[in-house]
Length: 429
Image (cartoon, rainbow, N blue to C red; front, side, top):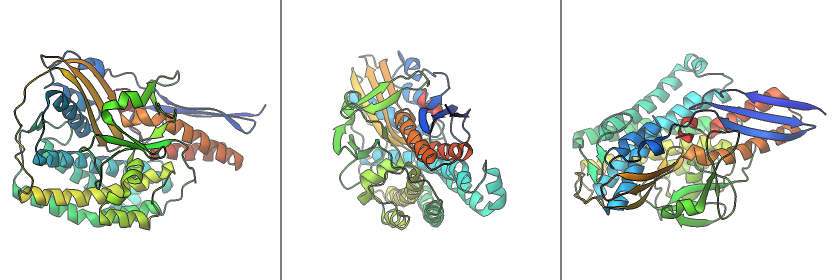
């Protein structure tokens, strides 16, 4: 029996630590595993018994890139329990805060983690030396995201100004206008980034799993909707029923839970690609044109296209942030961003946002004293791993059938993992 084992220990250029194991016997892939080897971090236990005021700050430590998403998701869960309705201005500021993390995440992933794969490099350093202008502009994009998070959230990571019911601080109209001009000045580079990733060759693999994303009529939502859609299965459901709709389950080879849709039993991908498929018509005009030019139109099920989808979202984010900043400067949103009054009460809340890497859920049970009795966090990467494994197997089978050697199979599988933009540390929250 001819057998080949492909092992990648601590896959490079991803957040966190994970291993790949493939076994090919007589031309068949018999084993395909994406093993998360990080220890459990126990954030769900850590917040138990804590006051609701502490929880968003603790939960933000789950991730250094998506910390804004964790804060806003927790706040939405808490506000649901307390019956808090925030103003339109507060919602706009929360969108800005989340968009800042999109610029941080997508800029880092595309140019530091993913681009070297397609340019024949093992790290970002040869790219920085060979194309310093591209590298500097990519760093500038991430720096703009850092600045946006700092000005709106008080810090570039782990924001402190977003609280239950509003914000404790807001910048001046002049600062909003300066940010808007910076967004406009960066748009050209974002458009060029879509073209750059369009030109990279990828293997034609069509995921057999589903795609999951937040949806709302006429918008491209990231934190203002409670509705999700399984794109392929074609049904919507409320985030309030997430534990009834999505099943988390353990596997022996990984420290992270995996996930699948309860109705269909299928794994799924939640990421920029899912959002573009679900809300294509609501992309900004520039972003939709760039996507169409790059050949990214729904339905698109090649997981490698997540790289292009992230580049398209950069264009969309810059357009939206520019418009939001100008409207905030002109005081066009109803209400103040100051925290609204509320009363502590017992109940269960489900917070839901679209983090840069996909759908994020925080489920909190709070007692009458405002302390957490139960917490459950479902991160995008934990939800994605089952579908990633299925796509890895399909890719490996296709390449084995094509007669490719182990080295090339290893390279393409690693590229696929990076296209998913996993945060393996988040998956063991």
